[in-house]
Image (cartoon, rainbow, N blue to C red):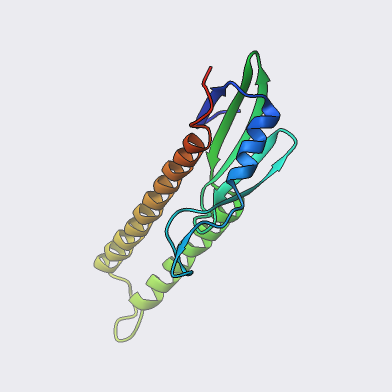
Length: 156
C-alpha cells in the first residue's frame, strides 16, 4: 500500500490498534459546551486495518494497516479523498458552472462574453484553491494526530 505516513513502533499490533481505538470516537472539550476547541477524530477498526477522519472535516480520510514486524509493529496510513467526497465536489463545481452560465445569460444580453467566461473561470479557480487548502490542512491535522497518538511509544 502506498503510504503518506508510517511508523515502526515497539509495541505489538494489537496494542497499536488499541492505542488508535482509544484516541478516536471521543468527544473533545468544548468552550461553553458548544464551540469546538480541538479536533475530534472518529473512525473504525477492523481486524488489522482502520480508517480515521476529523469529525467536521470529512474530506480527507486516513486508511491504515498495522503489520507485525520483528520487535514491534509497522503502522502505515494512506491519506485519501473518499469516493463520496469526490462525487460531491464534482456536483458542486457542476452547479457552480450552471449558476455562472445562468447569471451570465440574464437579459438584456443573452450571449456570454469573454470577460464573463474569464470571471467564472477565476471564481472556479478560487474555489478550487480554497478546497485544496482545506484538504492540505486536513492532511496535516491527520498526520499530527497520528504522531501524537504514538508519541509516547518507542520507535524502532
